[in-house]
Figure 1 (cartoon, helix red, strand yellow):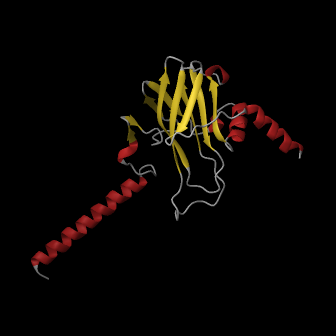
Figure 2: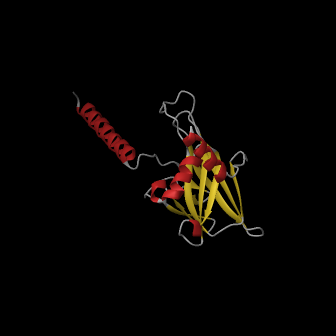
Length: 196
């Protein structure tokens, strides 16, 4: 083997090892690849998780993603477990869950037949003239042919946002509105299922 062939093999081997290390570090970071869209409109993507409850700021509004509904009061847990089956939203004023001057927001895509679905905050803004909180979310679904878990799933997002609001407009990026989920309907459906 000539000297230039040994150098070429050595450089190729070194490049291969560096590539494998870089790939291993990326794959083992937090389980999610980092893409350019982790910053949306200058704000960090709240779904790029660094902590259990990720705190982010949107248009001067502090938002805290809550990843574990079981960290909430058992009454709220029960309501959210029932609500996640429907497409829509629920809001709770701070006094309802012992966190004054904040609002708890739950947005659900409803029941899906497989895994691979997700919902994320795209933007938040307050219309000051009517104290309305406008929320836009990005709903994603698996591409045809993607390997997904064959289990019923309920994609939702749960977060607190500072302030209390008189009304809400929640929509996906196509403008399709999320309607409020009626808690009384949830309670009636639950009692009917318990009676059966």
